[in-house]
Length: 103
Image 1: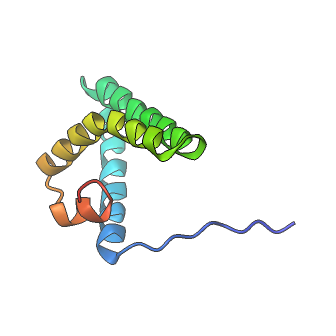
Image 2: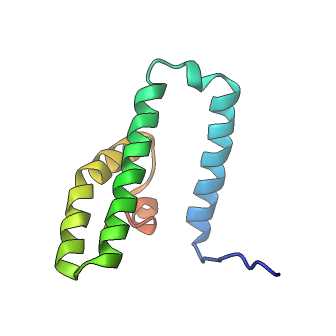
């Protein structure tokens, strides 16, 4: 049985950013970021955002567009917080647009 991987196409800008973020995360982990006082809060926020995103996708797949729009609207505050944090960390609006976080 052959398993084929799903593939996507992204811009070089986004690819490079993902590579740099991966390297940065490896450095943080190597230096003990898990011992940082805000680590648990950051982990909880990340998981909450992921749960909201999955719920939004589930609702969009199983309901009418009007309901899906309401689900997307419910996620917007978390997206706004994420965008704000990413901007503070130096992410450009161009990259955030490519990631679909800005219009």
